[in-house]
Image (tube, rainbow, N blue to C red; front, side, top):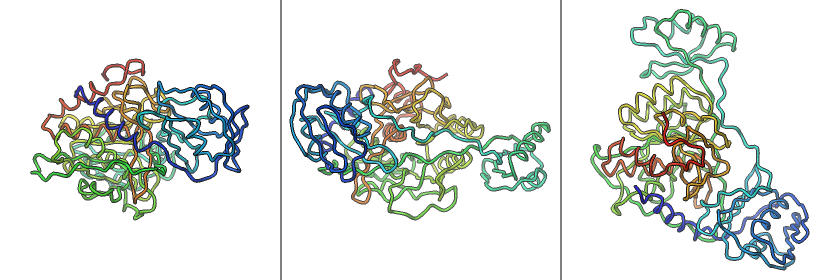
Length: 478
């Protein structure tokens, strides 16, 4: 376990070799003329006359001129001395950066991102503080005001149908094995009245709020000058007793890149039928491939792996899910044999149903890994903040936090926050603590497959990938 960071460093260095330079087609936005660096957006041309600037000065000028977010690998520097006129943006970047690698990521509804690095793209985590940070969408959960989740305790004599009639609600979701049901009321007032009624009865019914969970981060297309390293890990057939299953609680998972599909088990949908679309890479697909990257990195044997991924779609055709469906998805995955649960999602909603399920499953040996969030904030993000869940934030191989990544006492470990995945012959970049979580889930799966018991795997992950004290983390959750 002590060599985990070294193996990641070697892997990321290899990735950096093929992410060196590429061309991005599309309009450049934002024009602010600097004294010696002129970025002509409409013509897509750049002029420069620079005697001696350090790299950060150059990058700050580029950020001011373009509106790009620029991320630099720490301790990367060079003196820039260059003169040119009417170069294309990609040619200008190559002249300005010299032997330093770069990758430019265009985004549909957000500023472009420029990553500057020597070893690998994943190490470019230091935000140049000139470009305006995007506000982005908060991942915080919102209480669904006209809904309640009720759980019938053992011995309850009232059926869910009778309870719904008595409270004036409709049953719009059920998790029979959990004895939990999703009730919808006419409005918030009726829901509050029902909650008060059940609380006053102090009977055999638990009441909880239901929280919405927003859509996860979308991957963005990358145009690369050379293809990524091929995925070499092979699926190994084994007895059911030695198979390790990772439950991927996420959006639908599409067919993966060649060599990866055999690691997927048949998908399960708990929130209605999954949409049939192959045009846009789904978050679930990018997480599945990232889990396999983490698995490959941590697998000691060259012969292959018995690990499999069980995709559980908790979104269906909606752009949002709920804590009720997440709990239902977790239970379904565990019931199907999953012993590791990947939760590349999260928000502020503290669900009693979800917490109780995770707590009981953890006692039986199931390991949970949850995304800390991308606000950045120190406020707890759930389910990552539950003590049974290993909360994963994003950073570089030295343990430095990414500027967008959540931090705080609830965070446990740190892992790469950037993942390059392939879909339909196209490269995509997914960024954030979702990717970090998937990396760690894959790593944990490799250790479980090697025969290590759950407690030993969890300890190894927590100790081997612990966030530095400067990252505002205590050594362990209570």
